[in-house]
Each structure stands twice: as C-alpha cells, then as structure tokens.
Length: 257
Image (cartoon, rainbow, N blue to C red; front, side, top):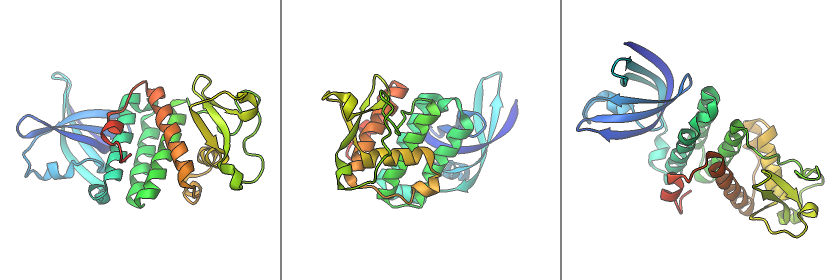
C-alpha cells in the first residue's frame, strides 16, 4: 500500500454511491488511471477534482484490494471558459474519449502533452479558433497512432500536392482520400472514380502544415469555412476507423461538434 503522485488531468468525474465519485485521470506517467474520490459535495477536494483541471494528483493504491483513491490534488491549471462555451466542453470530452478508446496510442507522455496543449489552446482562444485546434489535435494524434496519411503527395503516383501557388482554383477538388489505401489520390490517378472525401489544395496544404510546422506557426494560418468542413469530415472519419468505434461524444454533440 503506497501513495503515488502523478502529473494528471481530470478527464471525467461520475457519481459512485451516495457521496463518492469515480474519477478518470490522464497521467503523464501511466496514461489512464481510475480512482475513487471520497467525500460529499461540500468537500474541498471534490471541488478541486473537476473535469479538465490539471495538476499533481496523489493516489493511494491498495494492491490487495486492487483499489485506488485520490487523497489530494494540487491544481496547477483551470479552464473556466469551458463552463461558458458548449463547444469547448464537448471538444474536450470528445478528445478525452479518443484517448480512452485508443489507450493513449501506447504513449502516455506524448498523449498527455497533446491533450493538455489542446485544452490550454482552447482556453486562450475563441470558439472558431478552438474548432481548428480540435482538428489539429486529431490530425496529430492520428500520427501518434501511426496511421496518419501522407498529405504531401499522391499515394499511387507520388505526384506532389504542394506544387504551385494557392489561388481561387484552390477550392476545387485537388485529391480524394482512399480509406483502403489510407492515402490521397490525385485526380489523374483517380480516373473519374467517385470517392467519399474530396479535398481542395487549401485543405491539403493546411494538413501538411500541421504535419511539418511547429504548432505556434500553424496557429497563424487561417483557412476558409469550406476547407474547415472538408478537414473536419476527414479527421472525424479517420479517427473513428483508427479506433474502430463510433464515439458517443460525437453522437451527443451533434450540431455542436
């Protein structure tokens, strides 16, 4: 029986019994951890252990009973705007569900960094900026899973999508995503086949920027609404295929996410 300390972010808190709660934590050291929080609604600790708070969690583990409980939580970061903005709250839950379903992609530390960068970024941003932030998180997390398609060139002929300058014609279909090949196919190789996800050059260029540039540089890149919709539909589909599941967060957040 020992007490361990973790760098942790609270993913969810659910009632368990009359006065207790079952807490799901994302930790930098071990990934997902479940623990019981004891105490009624007036407990100071209960007010600290709230969704999306980040800090140092102290977990008492009883190996014989195979149980864990939170004994203290030193909060280092809050996200108060999430209580006032539905999108931010739903986006944080959606990203958290991705981590749970994919078991942190086998990389607790990198997942911890990515998820908290998303939370902190949304806290400092408006709703539209947060929507792009969620898409960047998914695209980077797909890479962590090892299944991110190459957005720089055609997966069949190798033709680069990055040639030429962006112009008004950049809104036209530049390539289509093939789920079977997990790659993008140029129009020449497509041979008039109809694919479910068609992306413009602006969309592909933005995805490639997310892939190769530093996060602070990508945040300065603006894209139009139609490109954002294309990227969102692609990212949501790819992450669901990668995790082999349908996310409850997406179903409950229809019209918001």
